[in-house]
Image (cartoon, rainbow, N blue to C red):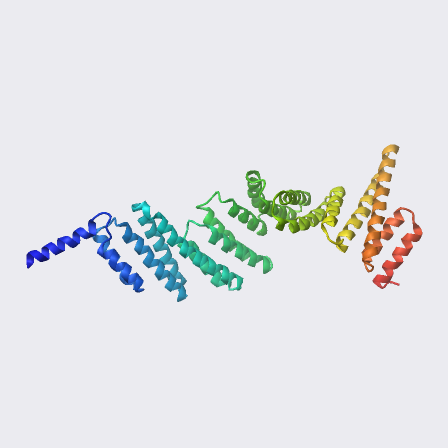
Length: 397
């Protein structure tokens, strides 16, 4: 009887250590996991590892058990425990894969399942405007798969959006910056995160630091439309209006060259923005602005009042600047040339103004600038007629 017991004990010990075989402890743990008895599964797996410390399956199922516990923690709203379990599960999965590379696909499948689950919950909470819950889910997604920077990136962007919506909340921007630095510490070449960091630095008033990051990113990624738009926005904040407009024009070119029809509408809005920047009092690039407003009018199904009015105003301002330059010119030939150029702009202003008020009968500023253009051309009666329409619309007469 004693000899039988000794043989049985030796047989079980051999079962634990035979290579390529699943131990009894792992088999029991699988059953416990199926029965949702995760603590028992974890205990029996650790017990088995005392006999066979390099059993890959044991580490894999420890990952499975801790993952299941994390899911229970989430259902109980115990996010700290869930984070700990996801982190522990990840470590066990990595050990399993290191011991047996053949488990790599199963490990990745398990990790992705948890990651997608938590990431989708985070997005749903965010869409429902449950921001605290969304933050918890984003952090859990990162804990379940720290190889992915997307959850922290999305969390940082959520805080940036909330900070912007709440009137440039500096505390939220600082929190976003801390998150970005956290991930960049392990992913220093993640240029999308660097772009986000530059964006936040700019909003925190650290514009020189932001500009330095953007300049490097622009050199490395000259055709990244989203990056170009971010840099254009920073340039605008720094009152570098011409640079901002130039960058927006580059984005328009990228959009027009691709096959994405969804970008067509973006081209229109970028055209309007760039035109406004070129025509600003700091830039005075009236020719570029007028070309862009012409482009915008071609993109509009029906000419918009605002576009026609902006174009009319620029014709007048451009003509007025040319007229002043001509008056200051000492060379008679050059003076005559500038005066003719000014007259051309006023005539184009009249054409644009007639198109504007002919379609938009109550355009107050349309009549006003049309009157000014007629006055510059010496058409006193037409100037007074349009000015009378302006006064009537404004209630001055």
